[in-house]
Image (tube, rainbow, N blue to C red):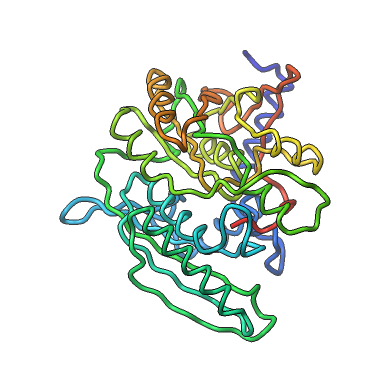
Length: 359
């Protein structure tokens, strides 16, 4: 569809704004800087990339893949500050392990080893810490990784939220693939591995601040076996991402911007559990922006979309996988959603911080 002259002016203006150098206008860090949306993007580009930028970091993938004498390794790091620490379906411990394993997995790597650093608040119950560490151990065994190094710091009472965990992970890339959101091209298909938003909604309800009851548990899970099966069976996989902060919408925007393509999404095709959808409607939140912790977004050659879908559905974590959209050439840099009401709207990056800390 050819845009009208007025529509083209609007698209040109959006493109100009997107290309401006990132700036952090705030004088202090706000919660919005950790939301995974525009404020996070500006902070990363204007502060971290401005000083630390290099070819591996600049790609802003979930893990850095680099060659070594014996092949390729992937390295990633993450921090976990979820509130509450314990929630239906998990706690900060298994969340930290699964999140790090998943960042390695979507980089195309088989996870090997993790590190874990703890920042503990004075007065934090030892019983809670013991439970968190036990959950980490169980999650590591389930994912086939070992936690091989660690660190512990204790801060004064009131200076932390009980327990924060920082991790690093390393894995080996065994498949001859070069994954990245910048490789998406017109004609590709976009898939998700299952229903979205369960983790974020579970965390919101677990905080006890909302008078909403729902039979929900977090979707936190390690996706490395799901990814390994996909990469082994399906050629033409372009990119993989796990949909954590900012949800699926953020990943789709990253694809559109990095590859300078349009991402066209069918709202009716996006799998969302009924309790998640109901809670989001009550709260006025779009499920596309709500975090997952055991779901991946896949960009694959359009000709291999059906094969990729079939492979994903052979694994329990991918049983409800779906093709949710496709990549097009125009309008470049935008995500467009064909709504259930028959209209089309732009899905932009998350603005502000409407959600609690979810990872």
